[in-house]
Length: 67
Image (cartoon, rainbow, N blue to C red; front, side, top):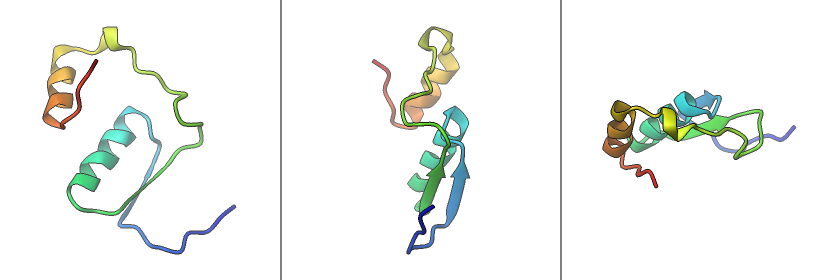
């Protein structure tokens, strides 16, 4: 285990779809965010053929693009 020398405003546990989106919005609001996840980065995949139009619009509102 390691220790951190700095404090954060929010710790988000779980970096999948909901956790990552929450962390991004909190960081955009100016908070210092720490994201914790037990899996290695890149192990979670989002099935893009299941992403509905409303989801695509929300990603666009957040400044994220697909493809």
